[in-house]
Structures are given as structure tokens and as C-alpha cells.
Length: 377
Image (cartoon, rainbow, N blue to C red; front, side, top):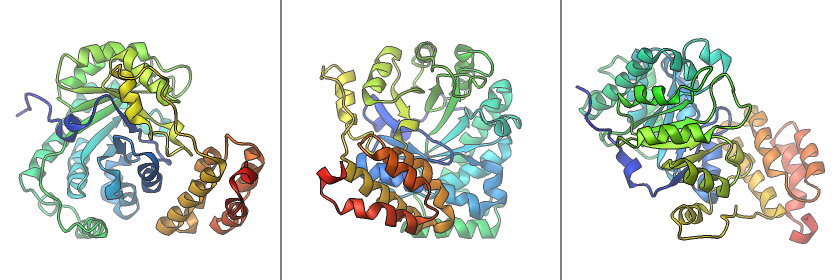
């Protein structure tokens, strides 16, 4: 039986408008999210998207995508795929791992994802999209009612890995309480059909719909259409479901202005957070600006060159501790953000990009962290 109203869970307790860290494949891993939580925690964070079928069949590798720390809460697991039965199984895993919510990716535009009717490809097959949401919701209800991972036939090895993941966070067994489900999507496939599309999604009563302001065909080109997001928000606000906007937000001030103009309940920031984990530090000022308690521009917290260097090394140290040297290339994208915006940054960045491992990076950057602030600048 379908719920008459969406279950909002933790979403209803967050201050509005909220600002969150958007999920980004290959970027928002547990290390990135931990750095963001330490230096300017947003209202909510999402994991990288994880393939539901792969989670069952290649569990040891993909379970790494579901690693998180308690300081990240509330943290939502994002999943994608095209087989409803695997969403049912994967959602049990999300619940068992103690996540605060589960988010269904219906927005990824990558060709290899879309070609299998995953991600934004689901916009073309609305009946399948709805069945995926129904299976996700049913899994949450069944797990909350006491159904176990053994009951649904998960392999013993996978069950053991899940228990070990919980144990690393000091959890024996998560409390069986209902978690909310949400959807992240786009304006349409090759044209904007957002008004029709959100009505289809609303039939399944998600707690939240997040809308990236481009169609699949646009990928990340052109400008995000926040006017289309505003039209969708007007429809969604006729229900109890919340709506968030996403796309082309590069400052907190920009986020505040887009939230005001579109009428959404909040916004997710993505690429701007790369190499800038402190981007959310002034989120309270953003809320004051939107709620008209503040008239001044909302600034991004400033970090000195020395602080940027120190945080980049902090990121490197945590990444090596959790993943080892083989994952070093994953740091490079973040380094390009950390090592920018101050005199001499370009030269330092080029040198850092030539390093091959963590030790070479430390040898390159550590001498600068031992200088006085004015010497670094």
C-alpha cells in the first residue's frame, strides 16, 4: 500500500533553506566528505553514486563507496541502476549500514550509465523509474519491520563485510527505524519536460526531489535553467515533498540568490567544493540572507595560502591512511583546487601535479608549511 504522504525523516528537522554537498562520482568519497565535515560542515552530504547490482556482485570493492564517518551525519547513500529487484536488495544494505537516507540517481548523464537506462536514462522510461522508487520504499518498510539480510538471500560474505563496516564505526546493529528516500534528477532527456516529470515522481511520494537545471543532452554545458527549477518547485510545493536545486552555484551568495529566485527549499553545491572544503562555513549567514535577516553579501570563508597548504596535506594524509598509495591519482583533482587563488599558486600547483606519490607531495609542500604566513604568500 502506497504512503499517503512522504516520510521526511531527518529532512523535516533541518533548518531551511539548507545547503548540502552534492554527490560527485570520483570526488565526494569518505575522505572528501570528512574534510568538508571538519572545515565547514554542510547541512547534509551524499555519497558517490553506487551501482545497485554491482553492490551485490562486487561487494568488497563497492562497499568502500559506502564508508562514512559519524561526523558526516546526516549522510545519504546514493544508488543507481535499472533493475528494481536490485534496488530492493541494495536499499536493505543502506539501511543496515545505518545511513540517514537513500537517494536514487536519475540524473547522471554519462553515456555508459544512460545507455542501460540508468541515471538520467530513467527519464525516458517513467514506469521503470516509478517501480524502482516503489521497490526502494518497500525495502525500507520491510527492513524496518525486521527483515534481515539473510532473509532476502544476501551472500554470507557480503553480510560479513557489512557487519565489519559497522564494527569499524563502533556499531553492533543499527536501530531499525524508517529512513526517507529521495530522487536526484534533471530537467529532461533531450528537452525540458520537468513539469510533467516531477508529477510522475511525486506519485511515489519521495521526501525530496533534487533537480539539476540541465537536460541530459546538455550534460554540463550551457547555463543551468533555474527558471525551470522554479516552475518545478511550484508544482512540488503543492505536496509535502521538499525540492532542492543544483547547478552553476559557485558562491554562497549565488546559492542564496538562486534559492530566493526559484523558491526551492535548499541547494546542493558540487564542483565549487573541490579543493574548498570550507565552502559551507558561512551557511548560517546564507540562511539569514534568504530569510531577510541579513542584507550584506554572504562571503565564502577566507583561507590563507598556509592554511590551504596544510589542509591539502591533511587530505593527502587521510587518503593514504584509508586507501594506500594506489589511490594517489584521486588526490590530483582536489590539489588543483587547494593550490589556487594565491600568489605563486600556479607554479606550486604545476610542481605538485608532477608528483607520483604521497611522499613526493609531502616533500614538495611541507617546506612551505614551515614558513611564516607572509613568506608563503
